[in-house]
Image 1 (tube, one colour):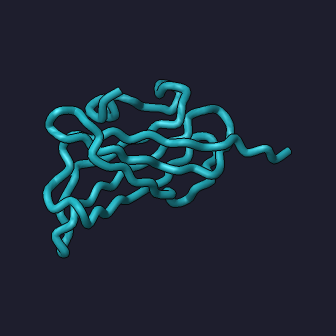
Image 2 (cartoon, one colour):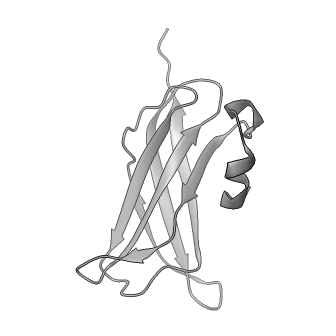
Length: 111
């Protein structure tokens, strides 16, 4: 599901039943580091906790160059809630073009 599909979605019922991770356009900050911000949407149907977002960057030959991890804010999400994250990568001095985002989480076991 590409980011271009989001304007057509009117309710969470139309989103896929999963934890959705979307990154925006990569930019360069004032220090010259590559920055990537994005959101995490919980549409699993129940609360999740311990969320971690992973970024894998590929070179021109589709070979992974490096990966980094961050914890979004907040890292506990009830159904239908949104968290945000931001990667600042000092080793990258140009915009990120070829990357993959994914998340890991645990279901919240509160009764």
